[in-house]
Image 1: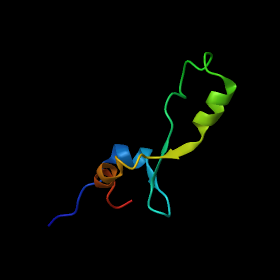
Image 2: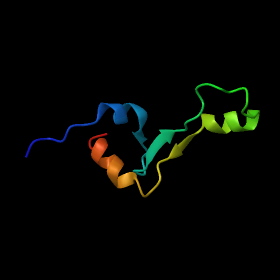
Image 3: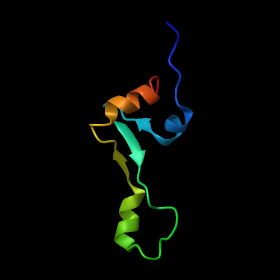
Image 4: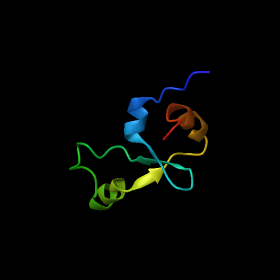
Length: 65
């Protein structure tokens, strides 16, 4: 059986924590920032964990990371 290919777009956007969860950055931080509060922009800087319902699908995209 051949090796699975890693989806490069996903590999650039997601990383795996030591506990095995998949980490991602938050959206809505690239433009139109005038209308967002300082607190909201500050919270968008932090990373977060991918939802548990999607983790299995994400594993197939980045199998060796």
